[in-house]
Length: 331
Ligand code: TYM
Image (cartoon, rainbow, N blue to C red; front, side, top):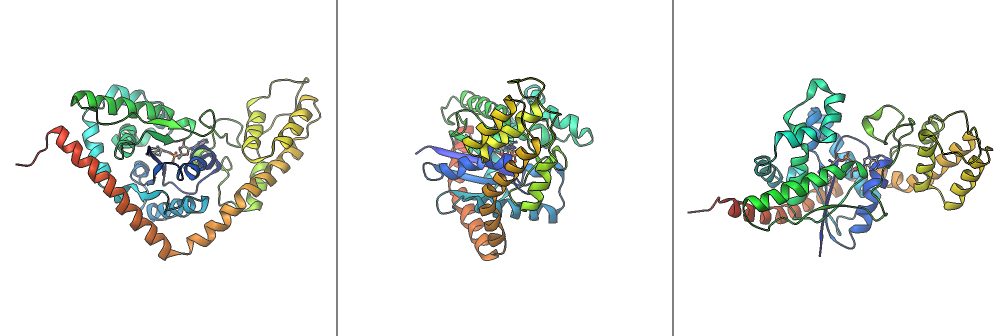
């Protein structure tokens, strides 16, 4: 059976981008593949969280993972930091990841622009740690959103380079995966770019948001003054609202608003009201489960412990073989 690995950084609540870009695939894949879904708490150290924030964020992601329907009896759910083999493989892979290629990664360049005061080595080697996560279980499929595509390309480069260096066909090539035809990019509400936690207040809708909060955010989404001609191409901010509808609304609803737009009869207020209600319908069952699971400390402890054990079993097998391949052999 093919192995699947994916992770979410522990930086706080999950949003619709995480859900429709990645997690919806996790939920379906867990029944068909050997799945490892982890919480990337080592990756989140690049932003220097306080110990209390780190712990709370990890808990939030664990609770929300479970609330979306990832089943710890089907998939292995674990904390990245509970599997020290991750860090060991990261170290080995760092030895043949080159400065030039790391500096050229789009996400690194974005971070340098966004936080020039904190360009640490962890940010630079972020794709190497990601590669370690994936290769640790020798996974071939990695369910992620569109923004992670370049990281997967780097993971293939690093894995292939290891294989060549040691003349050993050990790591298979991992590929980004989505059940939809293309990898998904969920837009934010600010009229440009993707939905993301760090993209500014009001840009992201969280799975834990109350109906009231969802209505408020959606009603404030950026729009223009309306179409100037019939059947015109939609500007980005309007296309974004239609793209959000594509994941939460019925095809009839989308067609209805599309026709109104094309006939220049659209009222954005009506579209937003409908969009908000459809988001609420999609997220309400998850939100209700979040509240239940968050209060079940015993269950969370059991899930974390069981996940760490299963993940380490797989990871230690790989590390043992990798050490042998590299030449760390016992006397
Ligand atoms: P992170 O935590 O930024 O995002 C987690 C997942 O959500 C997807 N995603 C989106 N998809 C569509 N539209 C959006 N607006 C959107 N925003 C986020 C991301 O593509 C991702 O799949 N580096 C990773 C975490 C990671 C990882 C890994 C993933 C660490 N190691 C190994 C896969 C395999 C990250 O920062 O994701």
